[in-house]
Image (tube, rainbow, N blue to C red):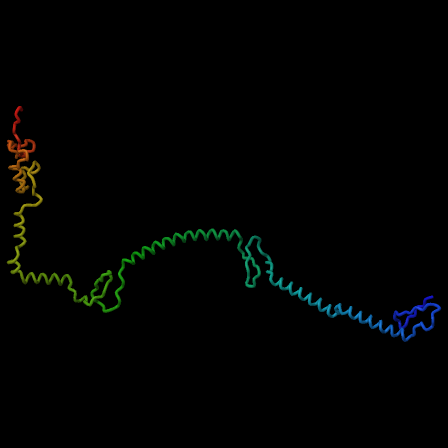
Length: 284
């Protein structure tokens, strides 16, 4: 027969065999001591095991921290997103406001395309204007190259001269010292009048010069040769060489040979005089 004895509500039991010696039956003190030792071990094991688990406060704090971190991440992600446009027109281009949120620009893609086409047309027109402006600028620069520089400020009413570079220079001669045309003509007339007698005795008068020139032959009427073009002329005059050749032409070389027999002859067509070799070869 087995007997289980429980003390102090703890699960300590001592089994006593029937018929055993009374000395082998455990005392109450022994059981209490065993119970105390085992209880200490159990409490130590439980405490050690419980240390591996968080307390309610720690668990709640960990949950709160995780929730707060998740909320912060979601808030940060939401703050980085633009608000959706309310009442936007379909097909309009999006714009941005000062805070970075999307807005309806009010411009459709078709409108922008039309504006770009118009701008390209305007740019094409401006290109022509720029080309014309460049041409005008080049012409102006060329015109300016032919202009003299302004004379540096100085004394007024001075005569301007030109230097080696074609630039005007202020001279030291006042304009008032330059004689006018009337003054020069008056001075010349006065000098002629004052020296009329001397001039008359020194130079021929215009009438005398004209009369002398009238007695001279005109160079245009000079003839270097006498021919049918000027025979019978009352204005043409000839050189000595032309007269000699016409009146008595020089014999040609074949008339200068010792056996030559040349006579003067007249060409009936031109009227010119020439030498004719009349030597008759025997047998002719």
